[in-house]
Length: 261
Image (cartoon, rainbow, N blue to C red):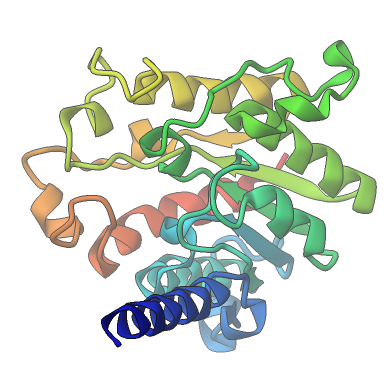
């Protein structure tokens, strides 16, 4: 009887776990933001090349948490844009990290603008950084490199442009986090389990974009948040931002998208 009870308990736990995992998939229909037309008409960005664009966002929890809507509503209003998010909590660029951005991009519809919003998940879960050459012509698009952050970034860029050669791709680097010194100190030498610092992941993001001439918003250095004011802009876990944090970065993101390239 005791053995039967344990077996049933394990089965129920597995079912619960599976049910929870099934929720961790893109839900673009639930993350669809439209502009306030009155605000959009008065925007200083009216007439810029990305005004009125359809924008898709890919990333981890920082790109899709409900608090992030505060930033994306700013984009929508300032750019007269429609913003759809495919991001999934726990996702990274590595194909070993959650519902990876590789999957998100592959299943997405066609848009004018694609935002690749880097997460912290590849770093915190010790996925390989790789190099800008991963999954490029330099290694013959070696699919074994899709387990690295850089291989995943390069896969996303290639997939988007094969799907829509006219697409504009913009990259947002990882934001800072304050639950560890290495998350916000660019000079920290404290590594993750595979011996890499957070700064190395951010640099890897920039390197991949440099190779493909993808414009990069260096959120890590332009966020304007540090140990003295982070309590105002982050929730208790010191990893995710609150709405005020997104309102702080939102105008910077909107200006970056508006500038276009």
